[in-house]
Length: 160
Image 1 (tube, rainbow, N blue to C red):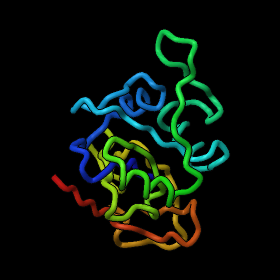
Image 2 (tube, rainbow, N blue to C red; image 1 turned 120 degrees about the vertical axis):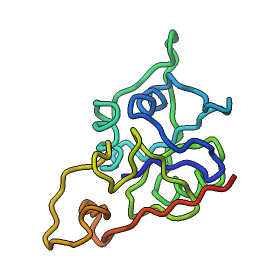
Image 3 (cartoon, rainbow, N blue to C red; image 1 turned 180 degrees about the vertical axis):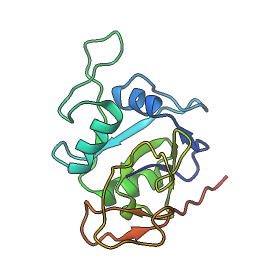
Protein backbone atom coordinates (compact mmCIF):
# COMPACT_ATOMS: atom_id res chain seq x y z
CA UNK A 1 0.00 0.00 0.00
CA UNK A 2 1.21 3.49 -0.81
CA UNK A 3 0.16 6.90 0.50
CA UNK A 4 -0.07 9.28 -2.46
CA UNK A 5 -0.22 13.04 -2.96
CA UNK A 6 -0.13 15.40 -5.91
CA UNK A 7 3.28 15.74 -7.58
CA UNK A 8 3.22 19.49 -6.77
CA UNK A 9 2.80 18.82 -3.04
CA UNK A 10 6.11 19.63 -1.31
CA UNK A 11 5.50 17.05 1.44
CA UNK A 12 7.77 14.04 1.05
CA UNK A 13 7.33 12.29 4.40
CA UNK A 14 4.46 11.83 6.83
CA UNK A 15 4.52 10.07 10.18
CA UNK A 16 1.97 7.37 10.82
CA UNK A 17 0.62 9.46 13.70
CA UNK A 18 0.20 12.50 11.41
CA UNK A 19 -1.53 10.29 8.86
CA UNK A 20 -3.90 9.11 11.59
CA UNK A 21 -4.56 12.73 12.62
CA UNK A 22 -5.36 13.60 8.98
CA UNK A 23 -7.88 10.76 8.67
CA UNK A 24 -9.43 11.54 12.09
CA UNK A 25 -9.91 15.19 11.05
CA UNK A 26 -7.46 16.51 13.63
CA UNK A 27 -4.84 17.77 11.16
CA UNK A 28 -6.49 19.99 8.57
CA UNK A 29 -3.67 21.80 6.75
CA UNK A 30 -0.37 21.01 5.07
CA UNK A 31 2.76 22.85 6.19
CA UNK A 32 2.20 25.41 3.42
CA UNK A 33 -1.24 26.26 4.86
CA UNK A 34 -3.34 24.52 2.20
CA UNK A 35 -6.34 22.62 3.50
CA UNK A 36 -5.83 18.83 3.36
CA UNK A 37 -8.40 16.89 1.37
CA UNK A 38 -8.35 13.26 2.56
CA UNK A 39 -9.64 10.62 0.17
CA UNK A 40 -11.01 7.21 1.08
CA UNK A 41 -12.14 4.12 -0.75
CA UNK A 42 -15.64 2.72 -0.11
CA UNK A 43 -16.28 1.40 3.38
CA UNK A 44 -16.42 -2.22 2.15
CA UNK A 45 -13.03 -2.01 0.39
CA UNK A 46 -10.40 -4.46 1.64
CA UNK A 47 -7.59 -1.92 1.23
CA UNK A 48 -9.58 0.64 3.26
CA UNK A 49 -9.99 -1.96 5.99
CA UNK A 50 -6.22 -2.59 5.99
CA UNK A 51 -5.42 1.14 5.97
CA UNK A 52 -7.77 1.82 8.90
CA UNK A 53 -6.32 -1.07 10.91
CA UNK A 54 -2.67 -0.17 10.22
CA UNK A 55 -2.99 3.62 10.57
CA UNK A 56 -5.99 4.26 12.81
CA UNK A 57 -6.24 0.91 14.63
CA UNK A 58 -10.01 0.82 14.06
CA UNK A 59 -12.50 -0.70 11.64
CA UNK A 60 -13.49 1.42 8.61
CA UNK A 61 -16.99 1.88 10.03
CA UNK A 62 -15.59 4.04 12.85
CA UNK A 63 -16.83 7.61 12.66
CA UNK A 64 -14.63 10.51 13.77
CA UNK A 65 -15.76 13.95 14.88
CA UNK A 66 -14.15 17.32 14.36
CA UNK A 67 -12.24 18.29 17.51
CA UNK A 68 -14.53 19.96 20.04
CA UNK A 69 -17.58 19.52 17.84
CA UNK A 70 -20.50 17.11 17.40
CA UNK A 71 -20.01 17.45 13.62
CA UNK A 72 -18.62 14.27 12.02
CA UNK A 73 -15.41 14.53 10.02
CA UNK A 74 -16.00 13.44 6.44
CA UNK A 75 -13.46 12.29 3.91
CA UNK A 76 -14.16 12.29 0.21
CA UNK A 77 -14.97 8.73 -0.91
CA UNK A 78 -13.86 7.59 -4.35
CA UNK A 79 -15.38 4.48 -5.89
CA UNK A 80 -12.17 3.15 -7.43
CA UNK A 81 -8.39 3.21 -7.36
CA UNK A 82 -8.48 5.07 -10.65
CA UNK A 83 -10.74 7.70 -9.07
CA UNK A 84 -8.29 8.28 -6.22
CA UNK A 85 -5.29 8.40 -8.52
CA UNK A 86 -6.93 10.81 -10.98
CA UNK A 87 -8.31 13.09 -8.23
CA UNK A 88 -4.96 13.27 -6.43
CA UNK A 89 -3.19 13.99 -9.74
CA UNK A 90 -5.50 16.99 -10.34
CA UNK A 91 -5.76 18.29 -6.76
CA UNK A 92 -2.63 19.76 -5.11
CA UNK A 93 -3.90 19.39 -1.53
CA UNK A 94 -5.34 15.84 -1.79
CA UNK A 95 -4.00 12.72 -0.06
CA UNK A 96 -5.07 9.13 -0.58
CA UNK A 97 -3.87 5.55 -0.44
CA UNK A 98 -3.61 2.92 -3.14
CA UNK A 99 -2.31 -0.58 -3.67
CA UNK A 100 1.23 -0.18 -4.93
CA UNK A 101 0.22 -1.84 -8.21
CA UNK A 102 -2.08 1.15 -8.90
CA UNK A 103 0.59 3.85 -8.45
CA UNK A 104 1.93 5.60 -11.55
CA UNK A 105 3.92 8.75 -12.27
CA UNK A 106 0.85 11.01 -12.11
CA UNK A 107 1.04 10.92 -8.28
CA UNK A 108 3.86 11.09 -5.73
CA UNK A 109 4.37 8.40 -3.10
CA UNK A 110 4.96 9.72 0.43
CA UNK A 111 7.45 8.17 2.77
CA UNK A 112 5.73 6.99 5.95
CA UNK A 113 7.95 7.37 9.01
CA UNK A 114 10.89 7.94 6.65
CA UNK A 115 10.53 4.84 4.46
CA UNK A 116 8.94 4.06 1.11
CA UNK A 117 6.94 0.92 0.28
CA UNK A 118 9.36 -1.95 -0.24
CA UNK A 119 12.01 -0.57 2.09
CA UNK A 120 12.71 -2.41 5.35
CA UNK A 121 10.50 -1.14 8.16
CA UNK A 122 7.82 0.42 5.95
CA UNK A 123 4.95 1.21 8.32
CA UNK A 124 2.14 0.09 6.00
CA UNK A 125 3.69 -3.20 4.90
CA UNK A 126 1.91 -6.42 5.51
CA UNK A 127 3.86 -9.57 6.12
CA UNK A 128 3.15 -11.76 3.11
CA UNK A 129 4.73 -14.76 1.52
CA UNK A 130 5.08 -15.30 -2.17
CA UNK A 131 4.95 -18.70 -3.81
CA UNK A 132 8.20 -18.24 -5.69
CA UNK A 133 11.31 -16.68 -4.17
CA UNK A 134 12.66 -13.59 -5.89
CA UNK A 135 16.17 -12.25 -5.92
CA UNK A 136 14.70 -8.75 -5.59
CA UNK A 137 12.81 -9.46 -2.37
CA UNK A 138 14.54 -6.64 -0.50
CA UNK A 139 13.89 -3.95 -3.10
CA UNK A 140 10.51 -4.96 -4.50
CA UNK A 141 7.09 -4.99 -2.89
CA UNK A 142 5.05 -8.05 -3.77
CA UNK A 143 1.37 -7.28 -3.45
CA UNK A 144 -0.33 -10.66 -3.23
CA UNK A 145 -3.69 -9.27 -2.15
CA UNK A 146 -4.65 -8.12 -5.64
CA UNK A 147 -4.17 -10.99 -8.09
CA UNK A 148 -2.28 -10.15 -11.24
CA UNK A 149 -0.65 -7.07 -9.76
CA UNK A 150 2.82 -8.61 -9.71
CA UNK A 151 5.76 -6.65 -8.34
CA UNK A 152 6.31 -2.99 -8.85
CA UNK A 153 9.30 -0.79 -8.28
CA UNK A 154 8.62 2.59 -6.68
CA UNK A 155 9.20 5.50 -9.01
CA UNK A 156 8.02 8.94 -8.08
CA UNK A 157 8.25 12.20 -9.92
CA UNK A 158 7.95 15.45 -8.05
CA UNK A 159 7.41 18.67 -9.90
CA UNK A 160 8.55 21.82 -8.18
